[in-house]
Every structure is written in C-alpha cells, then in structure tokens.
Length: 328
Ligand SMILES: Nc1ncnc2c1ncn2[C@@H]1O[C@H](COP(=O)(O)OP(=O)(O)OP(=O)(O)O)[C@@H](O)[C@H]1O
Image (cartoon, rainbow, N blue to C red; front, side, top):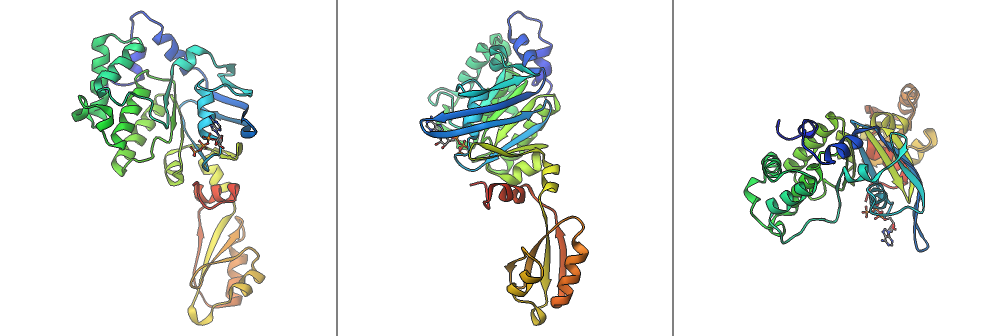
C-alpha cells in the first residue's frame, strides 16, 4: 500500500519534530548492554546484552518469567534498569529515539471503551499528523489489516485477534525506526499470524529493526533472521537463526526392523546419548561427521530399516540451552 509506510513520513515537508524523531530512530542498530534489574530480592535480569540490527526481524524467546517483558519495557523507557545501557548506533538512547519506537505491549495499552478509528486518529495526531493525514493513515491501515468493518466499534467489542491488529496499527502509526512487540502472535489465527508476519517483514524490508517476543518457537524459526534466547534473566544464545540451528548437536534417527531390534540398553551402550523415541526408533546425537560411524554401529546391532539425519530446529536449540523441552 503506497500511502502507508516509512516513505510517507520521509516525504513529509510539514513542520513538527516527528520527522526528526523518525529519522533519529532510523539511525544505527539497537544494542542492549549489561541490563540488570531486580524486583525486591528477585533478579529479573542479570547482565543482559544483545543487539537488534536495522532491517532484521529478531525473535526474543524464553520461558515464562525469563525476563522478556522486563527487557522490552527497559528498551522502551517504561522501566529504569538498575544497571546497563541501551545504545542506538553506539550512543545512549535519547528521548527522541524512544518517542519514535513503535511498541506493542503484551497488556493492551489502548482505551477499551473508545472506538477504533477515534483512538487511532487521536494517537496519530499526538504523533504530529494533521487530522486529514491521520484519518487517511488510519483508514489505510485498518483496510490493510482487514478490520475496516470495526472502525466504529468500541475496542472491547473486538475479538482478541482484532484487538491485536488495532494495537499493531497503533505501534506502526508513528513510522518507527524500531518496532518492539511483546507476544504479537499470541491469540492470532493462521490468517492473522500470516498478515502480522507480512507486515513485520515489510517493516524490516524498509530498514526497521523489528524485535518481538514469542513463545512460538516454530514461528520465530520461520520468520526471524536472528534470535535471542533468554533463560532466567541471562542470554544463553544469540545470533542468526541458521547459525544457531547448526550450533547444536544434530540428531540421527535410526529405526530397526521389529524382528531384529536392539534394546535401549544395548543401543546406549554402543552409542552414548542414544534414546528411544517410539517403537523401535531411536534418536542418536551426532556431529557433522558422525553419520558413517552411527550407521556402522547400528548395522552391527540389528536390521536397520530407516536412517535419517534431522536438521536442528530452533526448538531443539532452545531445549538444549534452556534444559527444557518447550518455551512454556
Ligand atoms: N513489576 C514487577 N514486580 C515484581 N516482580 C516482577 C515485576 N515485573 C516482573 N517481575 C518478575 O521478574 C521476572 C521476569 O518477568 P518478565 O515479565 O520480564 O518475564 P517474561 O519473560 O516476559 O515472562 P512471560 O513469558 O510470562 O511474559 C519474573 O520473575 C517476574 O515475576
């Protein structure tokens, strides 16, 4: 949609500092260095450092209570850290930059009793748009997200998924250089998740740094270029998703014919770390050069009917670095 996008702001010639803040937000990538935050005796963040380069989608994953929301609130300036800094382009983040961050909080931040268009136009005006411009932008975004029929409805009457879409529009209206979203995919059906991913990709394509938290590892795996994995207030892995996948140990799956299958004990004696998955199928942790060795050992133990090397997923990496089997 040509009327919606960062270009629309850059083309603006009118007065006001919105252009300045938007371009300030476009400078350099975001870097979080050594964030520490305590709540009473509870250490929520313990020296958290990571970066969100411009033009990338970076996923933020971690179990409940690992510190994701606390980190996001510090980046957006809603919370002060006890120690650590947030840098943009190598310099401490300014209020102008913060004002230009698009933030979609997990707890809905909009007025539940206000009509959708009314509150979005109100927000857009706060960002410095004229009434006509604000109305045009809001009309364009609500159409784009397929919620035009709810423009005159009160927010609280919308489904959770549609409320998320309104919240996303609120985060995008300021044409942010950095978009921070707390669990934007939770509660969305497939179609809504697909349009959310498309909008995030488009934003990254325009050079925006997109950073979002999620419990859905498959989703982070499929749409993010980078990921940051948090465990109990500490970053345990960070980097390109494809590199993270390659970092962990791969798994080889071996299935034996039912008539000549080894017991789990026999198998783990021959191949340390092997475990029974189901029936006569076993998973064997293996490095890049191990396939031949594992196959020879398996052939020595029984009749091999299937043998495959499985690519690591982000979920596997997460389970490895967090010692748990899922993000929840
Ligand atoms: N305002 C607060 N007062 C006291 N403790 C807090 C507060 N905010 C967060 N915490 C604690 O800090 C830790 C990190 O919480 P945070 O909400 O950042 O985790 P999270 O990774 O976002 O979790 P979730 O996935 O459940 O949203 C938790 O132990 C939480 O109970």
